[in-house]
Length: 460
Image (cartoon, rainbow, N blue to C red; front, side, top):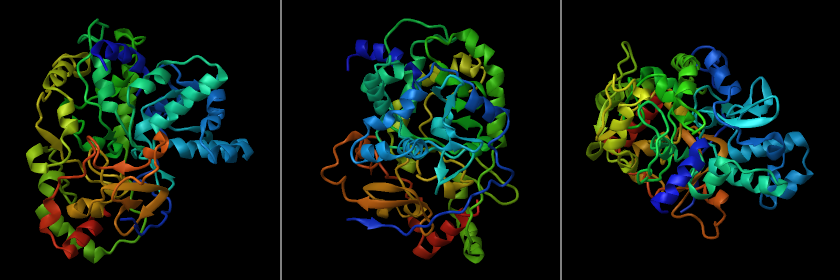
C-alpha cells in the first residue's frame, strides 16, 4: 500500500473502532463481588448515545444471513426471526442486553433502527455463555461482521459508509476476539494537531497487528493505560475512538462530561468471583508460592493489596514485541502533547521499553491471555513449553481443569481452511504479532507448585 493511498484509507477507516480436546465444563452465572454493573450513567451512555455515524441499519442486520456460507445460510433461511438473530449474535460475538435482548450490548441502536459501534464492542463479552460487566469480548468477529455488512448492503443496494470501505483495505482483526485497534489510533491521530484540529499530511508507516482487550474491572488499579503503560490515566484517553473528521474540538469538549461518567463507571466495576468450588488448602499453598514468585510484578492480593504498575522490560518478559514497537516514540510523544493528555500536563513515556504486568483480579474469566491473546488457559501461561501452536475455541465451553477457554489444539491450521471467516476462528501463534512465547518465569516451579498457583488464581 502506498503512503498516499494509506492517507485516503485513514479517512475511510475513521469510523472504525496433534489434536486434543481439553477437559471442559459449563459455568453457572458468575456474579461480580458487588451488585451487577449493567446499570449506571456511564453504562447507559455507552449503550444509548452514538458518538459516530451509524455503521448499518436494522434492515441490513436482519438480512446478514444472506451473505453467510452454506449450510448456515439455508439454516437461517428456514429459521424464525428470533433464531436468526441468535445465530447472527453468535457469529459476530454479540451479547444481548439484559433489559432488551433484541439489541446487542456492543452497539447503540436508535429509534430509527440505526446501529453504531460503541466501546463495548471490544470491551463487553461473555464467558461460558454468561455476560460479565467489563469482560473483554473474546468472541468479537469485527472483520467478518464488516465483510458481511458490506456484501449485504451491496445486495440491498444501500450506500456504503466508511467502515464498509475501510474493511476492504485496512485490516480490522485477523483472529476473532482481537482487533487492530492500536493502529486505528495511530491512523486517526495522524491527521490532527495537538488541539485536535484537522491537518493535512500523510500518515506514518503502520505496523498492523492484533491486540487483546484488557478486563475493565482492573481499570481502578491502574495509574497508566495500555499494554506498555505509556499514557497517563484519565477520561480523555477514552475518547480517542471519536477522531473521525466530522468530530471537531468542540465536539470533544461537549462530550467530556459523558466520559467522566464512563470513567466513573469503569472505576466502579468489580471482578467476578469464580463460580465453582476451590480447594482451599491448595489455594493457600499457591498464595505463598505466588507471593514469592509473582507478586513483584503482578502485585499482592491479601491485606493490604498492593499493585506496582510495573513495566517489565521486553528482554525480561520475552513476550511478542510487535505491539511495543508498533507505537513509535514520536507517536507517543505527540499524544503526550495533545488535548488527550491536557497538552503535556501529565507524564507520557515515549519509550517504555516493555509491557505492564497487569493486575490479576478476575483472571479466571478473562482468557485468552497475554497482550495479544495468544494463550488460551492459565495452565498454558504457567507451562510455557506446552503452549499450543494453533488453537480453536468452542463457542461457550470453559476448561475448569486448566482454567480458561475450552480449545482444540493443532500443529498447524488444518488444510482446506481457506475462507476468511473460518481462518479467523483459529489462533495461529506462528503469525506476525501472535507469538505465545515469553513469560517463562513459572518454569522454575514443579507441577505440584503450578497446580497450587492455579488454584490460588481462582480466588482473585
